[in-house]
Length: 329
Ligand SMILES: [Zn+2]
Image (cartoon, rainbow, N blue to C red; front, side, top):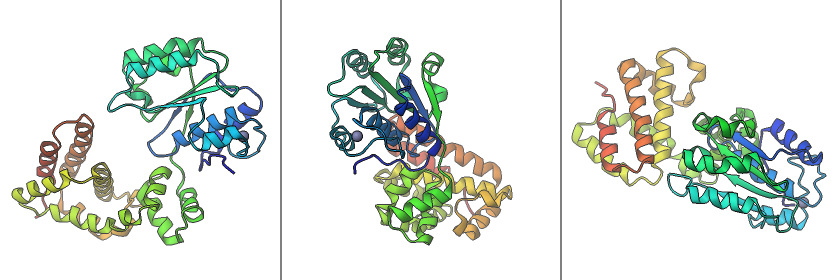
């Protein structure tokens, strides 16, 4: 059985399955929602169903999971499926031109040729415009699925030509169930990982495969607290170590969620706190650091994440950030 499995988003799966079965799919779709919640997986499963030789299953997206086409799709080798991702920081106009060129051709072996373009917010206005005509007058055998976690950055002309599916993070109980049934975690571990992954099923599954990454979380929390008492020299040394952190973006996301929790603690919104098991430390920091400093530091983390994506000097960005970590008396 090789049907691509999608966790959650039951309404979207149902909607797309019916469209496939009634041969009423649209030419272009736009899947939006936060990162790591399964947008690309949903798109791949949809592509599989669109090219399945016998899409009659009443589950998932409807792909049979047995035909040759389904097997190729599962392996990511289907000749009529093309996935385009940004090369570096941008979706290049050459990539979009390639989509336009290929979209005009007939499928190789299936009813449809399916194009999946991820992170479409990284297409600049020229690249986006290059796709407009294809979205407007598509060939009958072409299906295009755009994916974006920042649809506010897309041109209205693009959005209006697509059927938009707004996906949301999965409810905690659904993620915990998946972690238990497919990743084999016990109930307490599943609950903990669910909280750490913040409704992001993709992140939860990745973390489940790498237990060290989340089991060492407590240790990272201790470090995060220790920095508050570091001298400037110690902070700069820490920045130097962080520069080599291969999981830097994850670490900064953890910091962000942590300081958000400190803020929530200060606002007495306890039930929204993610780091439930670290309430005592959160309370201590919430007491010691003024709210204005917490807010300023959260902004600094967000800016640093942006800088790092723009390939600025990592060391300088991290040094500046570390010097802005609030001080605990
Ligand atoms: Zn099939």
